[in-house]
Image (cartoon, rainbow, N blue to C red; front, side, top):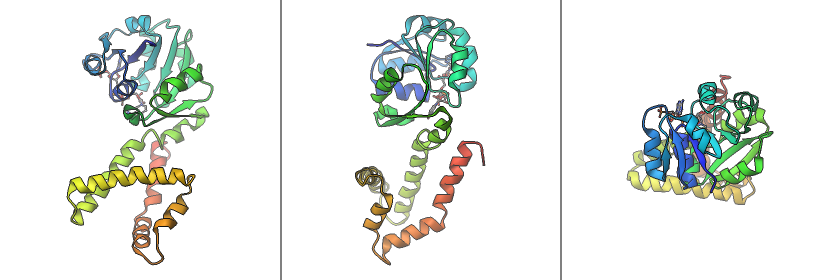
Length: 248
Ligand SMILES: NC(=O)c1ccc[n+]([C@@H]2O[C@H](COP(=O)([O-])OP(=O)(O)OC[C@H]3O[C@@H](n4cnc5c(N)ncnc54)[C@H](OP(=O)(O)O)[C@@H]3O)[C@@H](O)[C@H]2O)c1
């Protein structure tokens, strides 16, 4: 089994480690989260010692914050294995400068990797693309994109779990207002989201066909769709995409 070393033991590191379901080596910056993580998935915390981690890991997965790239690379100095970065906005060129002796890959997973239904974006031009695709393929789908498209892609899949959670929460509230018990509304919302995604996939992504299949002329669904449109659903999603890209 490949020895995986996680630099950083926060939300993304935990989601990855739980999804992989294998022991890991891990560090943090002093919070103790590395020890908590290996307590959950097995392996060993090396405390704050990134140099020791780099000596022992075959693949280093960078799970710290993007601005810490150079500091952490100096600590992990001279690593010659494969560095896989999940750092938002950090380019392959920056990774190659920080880790000149290593192979480097840039990926952008989402937190659904924890349940192996994640989406991981892989930057074209990454080193060892087959190895990285196999590693992240264990956690869901892997989609290779030009590096310049990672920001837009991440504006869908990276942030998506938060959007879907917000949408589900609001929908449950609407159901409760209409008289449903929260647990019933929650079950309906989750199974409707999951089933509808599968149905759209089965229709080859033809969202209009799925909408037409539910919408009788002049009926209930048509009135609900009109209300969503009038409330600005499409504009809200465009605005959210602009916000993630810093263009709003
Ligand atoms: N969350 C997401 O959905 C998501 C999605 C895609 C990509 N990402 C990327 O994942 C990275 C981490 O995000 P996150 O949400 O997991 O952040 P987070 O929960 O704040 O975790 C960051 C981790 O990095 C550790 N750290 C900081 N400096 C370090 C150092 N010098 N050596 C070792 N560990 C160090 C922190 O240590 P302490 O515990 O001691 O503070 C913490 O465990 C970011 O670069 C982000 O762009 C996140």
